[in-house]
Length: 69
Image (cartoon, rainbow, N blue to C red; front, side, top):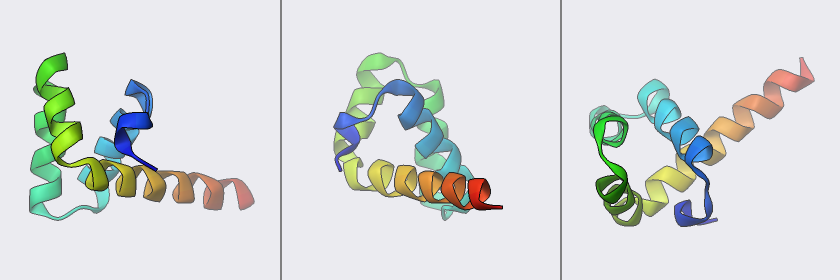
């Protein structure tokens, strides 16, 4: 999965997951994503593609685990 394949809502969920579970760098990338305009959001997504994709997968796992309970 590539972050560039995710829609805005999915990317926002990835950023929220970065804030919850990420280290200080990931948290700052998430905060930058929130305040960036569309052009700069795209730059962040392209530069940190793997990070956004990984944290989106983590988000989905927590959702699936929550549904099982």
